Length: 282
Ligand code: PAF
Image: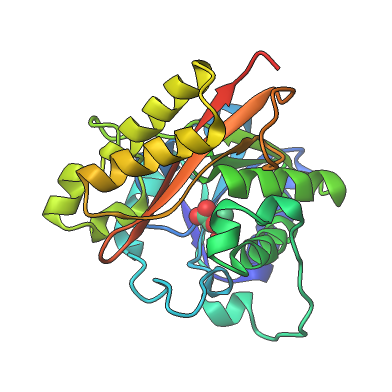
């Protein structure tokens, strides 16, 4: 595996591979890799000649008072895991390399960013789109791999790619979970022992929400039930529990083919998100 920190060096390598007609699979990450990231690599490995992973904790997608500083980092361990998983090129730029200047141009997501994390983390998806566009331009990937745990991010990026004719094809990869159901996340290390023990209630409550949804229980009632189950069984504070149409993220109507039940829960040092995508008879 080759580790590259400079944009022009990576672009030269990609150009050389493209001239040999090799396809490029891209796995963008913020590092502190876990089995969820590695499953993105596994899928990318199957579908491309070369696999590029980026590790960059993107300051543009963190708001004031959020966990940019506390976001876990371990470059050495990440490089080992990436190499073992079959990554060919690891791109690890620093902040100056990615953001040497700021001309003030902004990329603003549409209505899909008005709910869920977009509502409680203003500006978050502006920052995600900014870095994702830069990374797509740098890596020029044939296929790009995103996890379903960040279902809102995925939906917004799919719209971005479609509306702006970006050439990469987005691949959705299912959420990977711990044995007790907790979604794998780099942020899980910031849970205390007690919080880690109770955190699986998040998925249990969402599954219960899914059951109620299929029983035809009204949306607001489901959201209330799920929120109550989480707060009654953990120290987590509810940021949101929402049931919406997917991927539009508009209010759900029985005509929609897919719905999402998603939540964000704040613990003392970290905030966890999870969701279930539910297909409907539509
Ligand atoms: O999902 C993430 O880890 C980040 O939001 C991404 C896509 C790498 C952009 O910084």
